[in-house]
Image 1: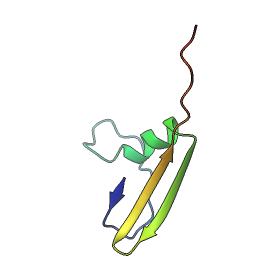
Image 2: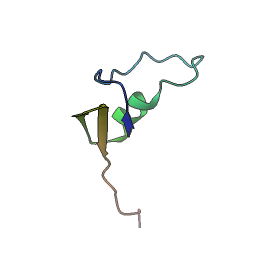
Image 3: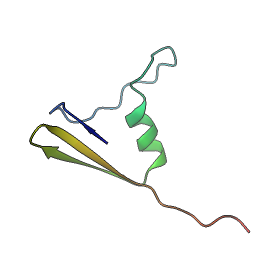
Length: 56
């Protein structure tokens, strides 16, 4: 995921009435690791999600 803002990502407080702004909250719950890299024009966030084998 990339965006043009130079600010580091900040998870917003849970608000079910808000449209948008839930991405970092979801990523932090689903992923094992998140890495943010500053770019010349913004930032890139890399999410590491561990895949598990299906239950037998």
